[in-house]
Image 1 (spheres, rainbow, N blue to C red):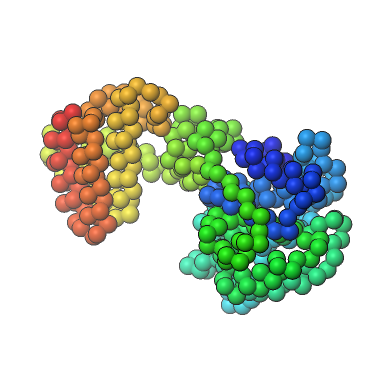
Image 2 (tube, rainbow, N blue to C red; image 1 turned 60 degrees about the horizontal axis):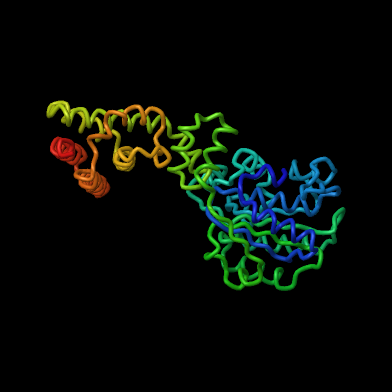
Length: 376
């Protein structure tokens, strides 16, 4: 991979290139920031750049030399990977190499490193992946061997905050007294959870969240998502590509929530109490978790329709279906009722989360909507 293939983060790319150009490569580098922004892609590309035998004049790994080709297949002999794994009946002291096949598949399918997706690769579904002390012991042995084909060994550690205390203390010794040919590259979603003594010995580089425009452009270019739908998903995802992809996966659920929302508003406008009773039962039939998600979705749609009235398209994050509905519906949402509607939906979600009777809670909200929707 090349730096230019990674969305955004131009300032960080420049810093990494300058380190190599100035020959001031820290023995321990920490890339940290929000999830789903491409930190691990950047870490791998930096390691590839260090090992590339013919880097380009504009500061890119060439992509053609033997080292670059080995990086593409995770087979570079001087590049080591450390990541959270789980114990099993057969693996009492697991290390990353025990799961390397699964990790390669994961990185290929989820380049923005969705941890929730990684947990699905293990048979023990309730186990939380951890970096165990056995990892530090194995790493120490491997680093004692000199480099084979490169000037540097690189150790890419994904989510160092997942180390238990014993592991972190052992790794600290390796970072405090590093081998001269070793570069550690730590990639963290939560730097504050890293052992402070490890953090203090790293060169930290903070990476910022991606802009909504960058996430939308990624969805449009890579996955052929409609630009308006992509921007709506990006806004919900708040700069996290993984979250945006989960929004895509939940499209069918969002469509169902949209239909329920439209139905509620039309029933309230028509004062159709009998229809509201049926609607209340249908929402309750979704179950507690889905009902709560429906109210989350509804609150967002109320906010978007309130903003719609300002006539500034750049502030809107509606998909095509939602935007079409809002053309006629937005006029019913104003400063007179928007906050009160959202408050009632908040209350309904809270009551349902507290195991209140869903049919009663939904019907109560629906009746209130008759008054609120007319009070615009």
